Length: 476
Image 1 (tube, rainbow, N blue to C red):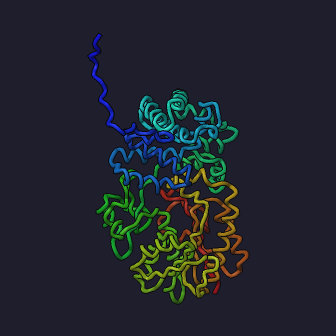
Image 2 (cartoon, one colour; image 1 turned 45 degrees about the vertical axis):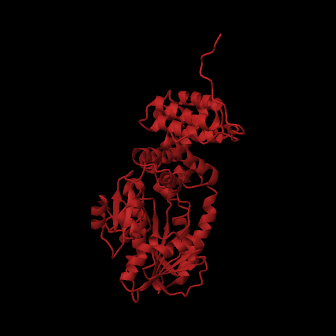
């Protein structure tokens, strides 16, 4: 019997079929948005990368734009923020601890469950796209596992999962809100202590932290006004900072905006602008031409203060311990009266006698969790004492470098009382030559500043990061 089926052509003599690589091959870019989101989560997990630095690079490298870029951003940042809640659901649906789940599969499951609980992506699309990612990267067996977990996760909506998994709000209100708004419990407790409230105020603070923030720009004094910057970028003039502009979340990469590219503006949270400007507000007698930024990297506040002091004919010394970060400061302040010093702020080797000194001290960063979505899961309560020790040393150094009658602004991006009021009260007791000013007077027009004398900003009250500012004057 003749076989009329077409015959496979002969392979050229000497050629071999391509060898399979070890491990799963990189999948084709059939779903570029979810691919980029998954690779961002993997970088965060494997290299302690920052999501807000990793993802934009992947989008540019892979030429992902428009709606795909928006989806990738929502999924990557959202899954990082909601990790605690997502992991609780995954553990329940898989019947095992998340530490026992294949790491790459766990990254994909976080993306999938996030889509099911917190986006408008149809459930079938969320499940199918996630299973496809797992199959392409980890094989069919683990794809089946992922499919089973996701189908169970999709049986309830977010509120139903919270009702099932969160502590009882009547007996543990902080624990309930912590899971509901995807914060470690110790962070929620720190917020509650700072707010003096474990109810509605805490819930509002955690909810604001759990939302994607607007982009804030600062107009460089002497180069462009906030009104002009808003007109060029299509943004809105900020409510409190005279140099601030707000853009809608998801408005694209602010680095592509012409004023930012040309150096007339920079990305900077309005809270950071306000605490830097607070240093300039108290009246001082005598000269006011020599300022110091003692912890200047990466340079946002140094650029703002440097612009102001340059206009007034003075100079700003900027101290940064890291050479890499010091170079960043040099680049953005190259045309200003700013002198960058690579040194440890605790002993920078500078001549004392500064009129105004900013101490933007290293901290837990609990006040900027909405902008650094993975940070809440990296920090631990044990980080606080060592940081508070460093903060005290830096503030004492600043006081020793400030002339009698001069002013020091102590700033941290954290509401944790051990990093804020605790540091200030301890340093005032140790130094013995300084008094604390009422910082509220240096925040004109800003509402809900509490009882003072320090100022604590909050996302849910002021639309800013949770920056803290205390102002101290050296005795004359």
